[in-house]
Length: 343
Image (spheres, rainbow, N blue to C red):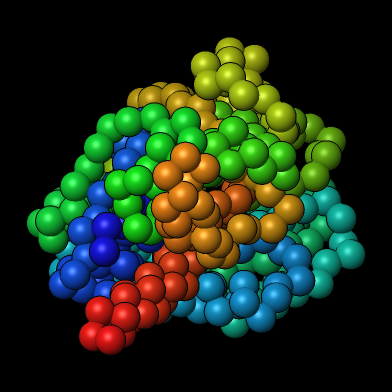
């Protein structure tokens, strides 16, 4: 069975990885096709925190989160975890309002609690509530090259090509895994998908040992700054611009990020800037993870399409769990094909 994964960000490569690991390669010929590969994907810009959105979760979404945690835990226990950017880190999310309810997934992270009075007074003055926890970090800029090499070792092919329509692939493949992110808006005409532009900076600040996400209109801290300590650098950001498609670094946004972060943590004032990047989060009201049969209008040949996109600002959080479900779908297709071949 010939399978093509469209998209080489964290969602696409995670899907390819889980298919190969969960289904094996017997009877499976896989290709990853994308117009951009690491280090030029949106995933390479991401902060890398495993932290789901703070809304009511469906049973299916909770399963994705649990699968993701299980896989990250297995990676954490390997001797090469530091090389692929998987580690644990503690930190806070705080905001200005006080009408807060604990999220459904609070038991999936470690040490979940509300900020103490001392923390709110001395670390986050003016902020009203939030939470502290220890969670996974997954640095895509390290993880994606590792996944790529792992897949190549298993015989997976990589093709740099911009796919304009899934019909282009329906003659050559039996299964198409659509992980096109924000590109799904054009690729499959999904108008529910829209970009949320983000801009980040990597700085040299080895003294930063925790992550912090600060939300809400603050009296003197502009924007929505966040700080994430990485394995080799610290990432700072704070830009969310819905509907904006441009990918150039905007000096105005650089100033907003810098003012916000240094107002919150003055110790970053003299940190050396190593890199600045911009990416587009693939926003959607809900993740689209479903299978459909598509027929080529010219040849009449049918192909199975598995859509897996719309992970918003939480692609790293959802990717490995959603990939598990994709792998289960592919395994079912392989079993059906094997059964038919024996009849």
